[in-house]
Length: 355
Image (tube, rainbow, N blue to C red; front, side, top):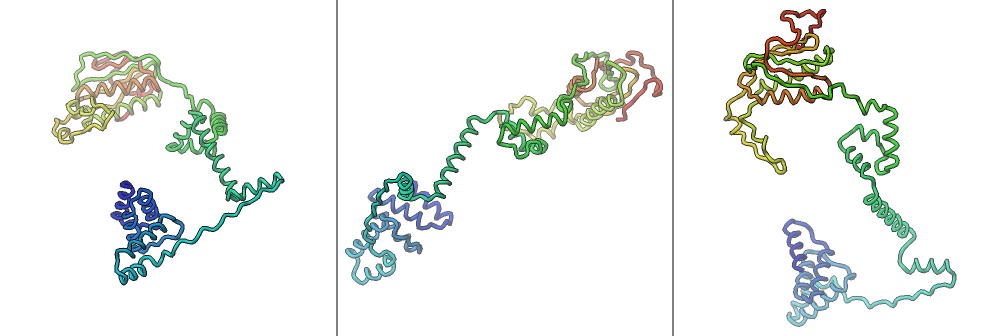
């Protein structure tokens, strides 16, 4: 009852209206625990609040009878009459119990079944609803314990993937139908749309340095063949993005607060410390040039750290593996391969990407 009283006080503090069911539960609990004084107090508060129960509760009727006897014994006649008029007039004495009727079962089997249903107090509609609820619970249980894991993964993917939702449609919840929709999608789009072959190289490229000066040096790229226009755009786009990041001060090893942090919990970042670090900026870069299977770009890293070279190599590693095969990358050096200075004619295999 202590927890029930605590909930009742919380409802009062929260300005929630207490109805007759709330008071009925409190009075029932007090009476069951032989706390009649608390039950009477709850009854009086209930009547003062203007809430009057029906005669469906024997506990409330019992408290009303005890309250009448208590008032008659402790109050003067005039005050008892006034209290009875104000508070207890809504509770007449409980009616006498009516005798129960006993139903006899007929001898016929169908009649016996009908009388059993009538005696149970349920109608045909209620029995149908009960059967539907049981069947629904059984299906939900089977779904939770026998539902395929791959189907549950597809359902979770549909929450953020509009294309997946369009493919599955109304088949969600039916693994067989979901499988049919996926197979139909694969047949229409073709396996090439899902399993596109890689155009890069399975072999890792070689990295070397030749008198590399970060303030004035070339970076050379040797490909496995003469690059196409698509290859020029891919490699040039990577170099351009790398330069933009360096120009904005991304390659600053003095401010790596999150590099060694554990991401199992929310890390902290000190903005004041980041703003106090000396800026690190990429100074200048040339266009990316290509002759035959060689490409190069001139760079002035400025105050950027060698961290920028690691970032570039990481990008080139993925680019070479997935899209464009790179044979080697050389930092420094004035002339490599068959490179000819001043040869800028496309007729001789010269191409360039504008940064």
